[in-house]
Image (cartoon, rainbow, N blue to C red; front, side, top):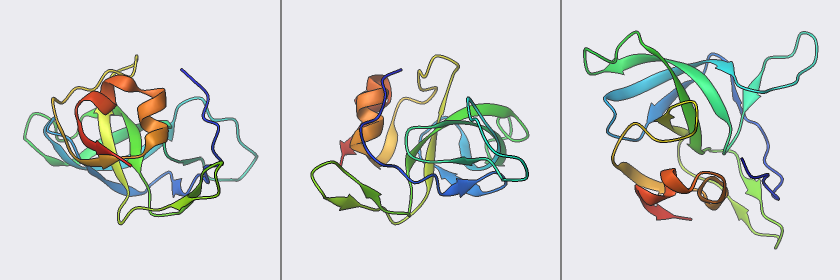
Length: 132
């Protein structure tokens, strides 16, 4: 997994509900864990753009509901700062369902994704409508 050269604030805490923006069958997921996070005592784990989290599917198709799966954050409301000084923010927090290697389980992402996600996960970028 490639590192991200951007300053990304981790703004989605454990327990947050996010929109699942792919066609894997999940509609709304709840973040229940963070993969590879090193934290501090008594501080909630958080994720940002390009991070992989463990999520429970709350709404969606009957075979996906109550499943625990890995997701990658593709959009967040909190603005991120890029090295050229540009700040980018999205209108919602969105995730895409992936497996352990970062390969998406859906075949299409209905919306745009951040460029930082496209650099780190090219397979996710291949099925997205656009990259911002």
